[in-house]
Amino acid sequence: EGEVADDLMQFMVWVDNPSGKLKGCKEGKYEWVEEKELKEFIQKPFQSKEQFFREIDLVNKYDGSLVLSEVEWEDVERENY
Image (cartoon, rainbow, N blue to C red; front, side, top):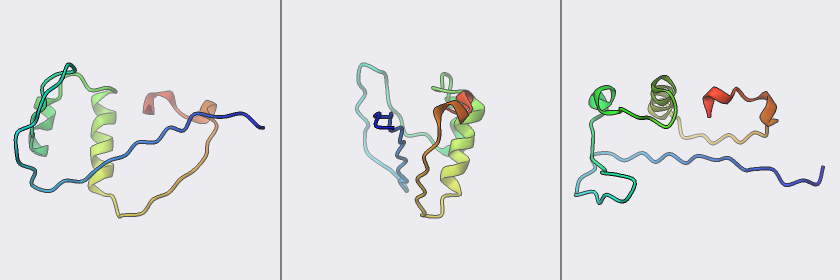
């Protein structure tokens, strides 16, 4: 209806066998962590741990397709964001 809405997009990048030294910043220290060690390593996820690991599962099952859809914010379960 002629109003600008927020575009909420999240990009995920797949990296195989990363190496090198990561540089930290004011947000904290960065480290390479093996997926099997994530449950013990992640202490303060941005969302719940359950949601974090659902997203990891989505990345692991990614088939290369890209689907964009438009939804009304009121129809989205807030816990997923």
